[in-house]
Every structure is written in structure tokens, then in C-alpha cells.
Length: 330
Image 1: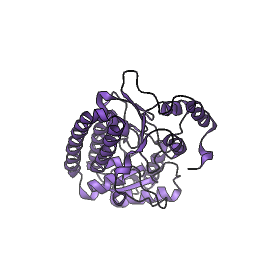
Image 2 (image 1 turned 60 degrees about the vertical axis):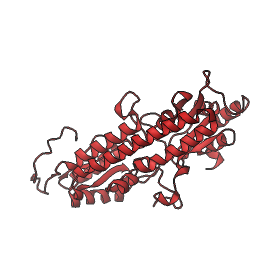
Image 3 (image 1 turned 90 degrees about the vertical axis):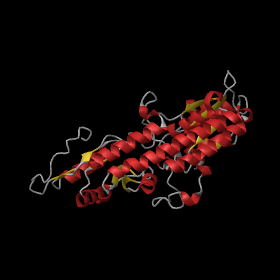
Image 4 (image 1 turned 120 degrees about the vertical axis):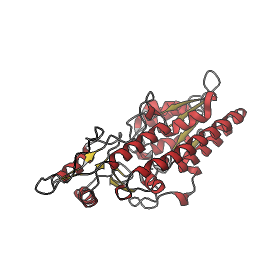
């Protein structure tokens, strides 16, 4: 990241924060004050930290971390924290300089540092970089638990017993979740296990659970989809009789509607399934507001949409199949 990417307001906030107490300030009740970027990390830190950690998440529901730029308020929040957690692998690209600045002043951890690089999916778009969406493979995301656990112990050694117990319980939860996903996806016929999305965020999901994944955009939403990209997806949908395509909650719906319209122009109807959660979780007061709930939502949506028969018509408009009968598809 180049320094000129850091906005003037953020630089000013860092300068103001630097005049305050070094190393951040603990919560008034003695808890460790942690800040996390995306919701999936916020969830891990909260689960492991328990009552000993007060965690603040910067990016809420519907926020795209690829494009998110830290405000002056965010920088102040980061400056006042005792410890900072972020994903890494260039997920938080637009605030990379801010995180670098913070790392010079206080403990700052990339949770993906605990993952063997040989296990990561290399980007086909950005040479020498990896796909950052590791949370879609539940077993792989389990490794982020290790990083957070050790980091919290480093910052609060007195809480080691509680942190280790909470981390062990969370690993058990993730093991059960991974087993559930593997069983649930068997409901989709093998020939229909093609996940077409607006944003290429599901490669780890596909590799772990047996789906071919095709995205309109690349792994970063900063990339632009071309006419050729749309046509590529249209050909796949028609040739393979794929019944549904998907858009994520953090991506404008028009990106996938263009694909749907192009398919229809060729005499075929493809449904847009209910939105998937990719780079952000749901609202805190919903089942999708935590990591296990988000995963279960996505898997149920994918399975139900792809298990329905395709709504295919020939060039003359003759319907060659019955209606899906699913109210979940649009």
C-alpha cells in the first residue's frame, strides 16, 4: 500500500491519537479493549474473549471490506484499542495503510497469518496474492481461532485458562458446523453443484465442499465485470441448465441482474436466489449475525436453490419444465 492512499483526515486522526496515551486504553471495567475489522473476526474475538474482552467491530452488515476506507472516527477507535485484529491477505485493501500505522504503535494481528500458505488459493487476477475469503472453508477458518487465542493470551496472560476453554468450545462448534455442511450439500445433484455469484468469494467453499465456483467479478470487488465476463456466465448457465444464480449482501444487485437479463434474452429463465452473506454477516439480532448462523444460511440457500429444477425455455418460448414452485427464488 502506498502512503498517498491514506486520506488526509485519517492522517490527522492518527496524529491526534499519537498525542494521547501510548498503547491504547483499557476498558473502564478492566477488560481488554479489542477492535476487529470484519464481522467474522469480531465474532471469534468475542467468543474466545468472553467477559475479559470488550470487542468493537468496524465493519457491520452490508459493508464491503475490499472498498472500506477508515474514517477519522475509525482511526480514533483503533488508536484507543489495546489490540487490533484484521483478516489480512489484502482483504482490507483500502485501509491497509491505516493498519500499518497502527501496527507500529500497538499489537495488531492478521488472523490469516496462522494459515499455511500452501493451503491458500492463489489469485488468478492478482499475481503473487491469495484469495482472502478463507472463512468459507469452516475447517480453514478454524485456524483463525488459534491466532486469536494466542494473541489474547499474549495481551492478557491472566486470562489464559478462560481463553483456552472458550477457544476449545469454539473449535467443537466449528467441527460440528463443518460436518453439517458436508452432509447438507449432498442434497444437490452433482451435475448442479455449480455456484455462480456476483463476486468470486466462494472458491474455498467450492474446494472444501465439492462445488464448481464461477464469479462475475474477481476476488476483489474493485474489479469491473466486462461484457465477456457476462457472456461467459450466460454460456455456463444455458449449457449446464443451472437453475439459480446468486448475489451477495455487500454487492449491488445490478451486477447479477445483468447476467439474468442476458440469459433471458436467449430464451432461458434463471432465478436469482436469496442473497448470500460473503464479506459481511447479517444484523446482530438475526441468526445470520454470527458466523455459524451465516454459514448455515448460505448453505441452506444454495442447496434449496440449486436443488430446484431449472426453469428452461427454448428459443420459441416453449416451457420445457414445470415451475420450481419455490417462493425463495425470484
